Image (cartoon, rainbow, N blue to C red; front, side, top):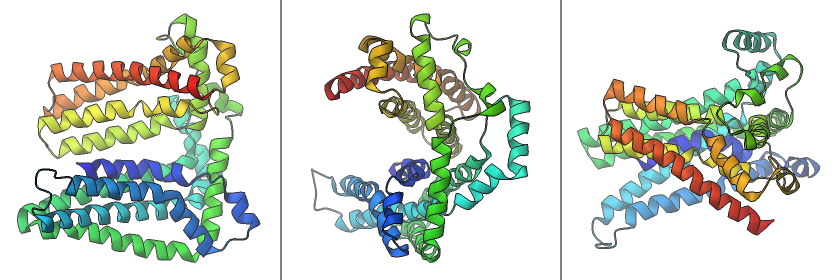
Length: 365
């Protein structure tokens, strides 16, 4: 299960670790070649990879009652987990770093403009065609990792624990091959992808697309006293962070897990973790890029901003509840009582994390 959720983590976190790169200008001024940029990428992702290895090691060797028993099995699973994470991370880095040209094509081509117009006309939802390659990469990396976990489990049940290493080693070899191919044209691919993401996250919606921005009157579920605060926060979040796309991938991954027919407790745990994961948006919204300190003080009190962070999370609650309910109807995993408990936990955790976020901001500003 740790590797299963690690696949989802790798799938969506890689582009945010790498692009847009705040050090790109320094790299250009230093005229760094492929080797320098390659080391820079590894350094930018190194904390996540080393942290994952530490977590995997803790899970494998954290046997307090009998730390010296079954060392062979523990080493085997530690190697499988580490190879799996590092390999899948390498694949993800390679795919995302080489996505700049494809993203620019979809953003600027006639095909991309037609897609934008069709989606806007039929679904009344703004879409940037340039995000299509990143969306595909997210699905590919997440799906590949989860399939790898499933294949490893199948090998384990059929042939033994040693064969569970095969998917991890395959990922490691594939990552090595892709990294070698990436290295040959790394300078071009890195700056191209950086330029696209810098433009993608830096620009605002203009022209006819402005009609698709979230409007105050659409926030019928928000109390009037904080409606303008919630509107401003959601507008800025939508400009800077594609939360809807990330959460959609999360739903797809949970459904993929459900399709594997795990135990009910496993599914309940997965939905609970996913529900709490939604509140990463609260942490992201603490950045001054979304609401600087002077802006917060001007619009309202700390208590009001605590309520704002709670209410922006209600944006996703109906989708979450509907997804859990439909999933339970199809796969018969989660009882109605458990569904209600998950939704209540979602609301309670939103309130607690929002309150902690307020105390944190007051202490640091």
